[in-house]
Image: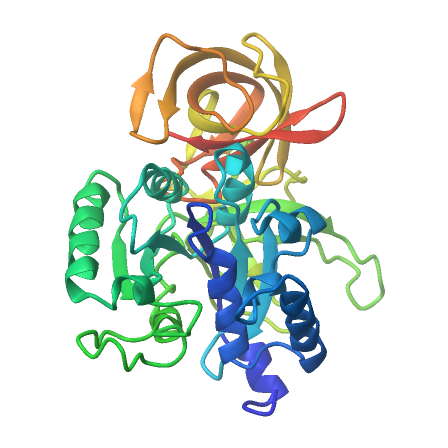
Length: 424
């Protein structure tokens, strides 16, 4: 923390990113190198990793052990669960989600990537673009991650060849054109030796577009949130009932989209009643303008019956109000999806129940083909389904708004999350 003040640290912009790639492509090693070279690990952690590396007979300090926390992960040298790591540079704070590469852990990758601003797709320079690369890139595009960094790793094993890098960049660019990814950057690295991770590589003088850390620090995320369509799901009604705030009634929540200001005319869903914003409070101060993803309290000019699960929107910009929803779903439970089965749904702050009407198709995530005949949706499968809810939901497409276009499916018997959906 000596590089910057505590106050500066708290005020810095936060970037969430996820890593994905085939097994043994070096995801955990890359994160370990990023943490180590950024001086974001403690000496006792490093000493423990050194001892473990010697015990395993490794030639180098195995920085992957910094993120592989489960015993099974360390024994097999793979990532199984999602590992979250936090670090900061003088320019930005970061949360890393290290996600597994195995097909059977697709749900873990979806979990780690669901809140990410950026995705690092690791590609082994020896193998080039593989089916696993395509699968992880498809999931990144499905989750509408706006920034993708293709890291061509293990460049030391191909002699730091520019031709190898150019070929992989060409192949991945051609595949990426099939997906809706707004931005793709390419960085040749060696996570084991630290080339182009934090420090520029002397072995690749032909590359001068910034190290991985510089690319991460330079990603613009201000436009990643929907600032066009105002959406405010009400999470809690605040009534202090004190002498100082005797008549205060505020609606607390997190702005899910757009911009709100005092004086704005708003419509309350589902009642369709209209009012005007009287004030917006942000922890002991009044705000003149709030936007996603700020957490605020809004008070209105009129006393309207509003409760958790309702939504404030602008009267000239309504979401889709519907009980029939088509969505892409990633199934996360060992028990297969049941057509005509009844499940609980959580959408923003609104809780409803639903019936699965039909499975339209499954997706082969390795080649992006639609599978129309096989309608059995099991663990880690991705499919397009139709549901009908018991009450209307106020939705936008996931492409338009990642917050109002996402929902989770819950097993009412166990209260477990068994699926995540993205509204089409």
